[in-house]
Length: 155
Image 1: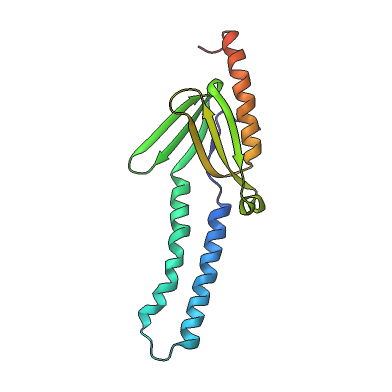
Image 2 (image 1 turned 135 degrees about the vertical axis):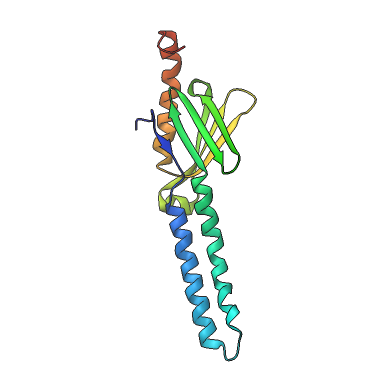
């Protein structure tokens, strides 16, 4: 996997799974309301729609995180109104960890954690598609970065 100039965002797979679960909860709630409600107020129908809040939050959070690769640097940007941009030289990356829960493994996604030299230390981004491929590409890039600098390819 070539990572130069690539921007990665968390996967939509977990968001779609959450929307699917919320839909099941909403349908079951509406069915239960009409099956067992004789003279209950109509506003009770709104309660099952609370199940949409977690997937909407996941969807929004997904859009607010990006990891990009530019010129032997990893750039992690997060936030909505206030943005945080963290740039790490790939040569300073010491450890790349991929963590996958059972549910993530079933969906083919995982969490990526990076340890870098320096005081800021750890960066993480969750629910990435193909996390192992991304981790391998980061490791390969971190190995190539010192070689390129020693040849004078980068300043």
